[in-house]
Length: 425
Image (cartoon, rainbow, N blue to C red):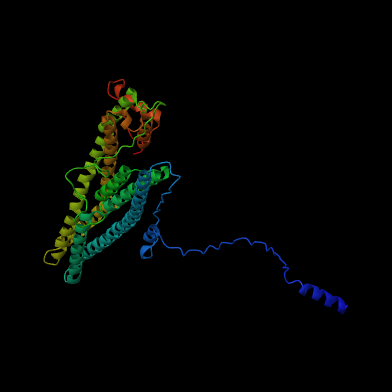
């Protein structure tokens, strides 16, 4: 075995010119790419949304390049209008909460001031009555001073309360809350439909400012006049309102009548006449009556407490019981007048009539401005407009059409049928 290994070694070493070639094939490993995650950075919209620790609810839309079917400028304009509408919507929601809270606060004012003034007045009247029943030689100095001070305080408080009319302030805030909620629903509808325009953003902004002007929050400087010369309908809408266009087209692109016919135009004109002749005139008449009554009551309350204060100041044995009787009777009458005025909320009734007259003025102006547009394509769709007017007046479409025909009819005695346009109030 050793000789065989030696001979193989000699044979291998004896041929140095021969070379041995060997190739080793190693399988290739698949290339693996490692993606290092990038640290997320806040974009500008996110940074604006989270600035100062607050998170806004205004969405920011991004433009997708490559798969857009509409121009980039149009997409950015719609996105900006959407963001602006969301900003206006946030302000409107905030105003709803503010007016609601202020309305509750002023309702508490009305109740607390009414009860306090009545308690003060009745207490002073009771003191005056006790003095009137007293005999000669009884010291009335304490009752005299106390009743005089109480009547004087009641007079000052009544002057202030009648000046601001808390019940009317409460009704103003109720109407403001309702109208801001209505505007909130309109903006939410625009956002749900999508693709808002700059004109719609401008229109929403003007409506917010018009409501702020119609129903101010402060009491000093900008408070609405509580005792005007006559009733003026409330105006809470901008002077120029943007009318929405709802056009109907043929396949060739021509504009149809947009839902308008001669019969529909005549129907709308008749409705305007009924509103002018019945609803607006009636509410203005009732509002002026409530205004006159409120003026008389507002002047009578402080006058009676003032007379009671003078009577209580002259109470004493030298003047007899008549001064005390006058103070007691005047105080009782003042308490009754104050209860009727503020407990009955006469100021609130006047404000209600003022807002109802404003509502009919809004319906009237809306119909007249629509009919004044000669281009039918620029009007709101006729069928939709008719449905809106019917809902505003609390009628069905058939009832609205019947109302438009009734002024041309007459009763048996020849007088026109007496019917109001609105069935809501």
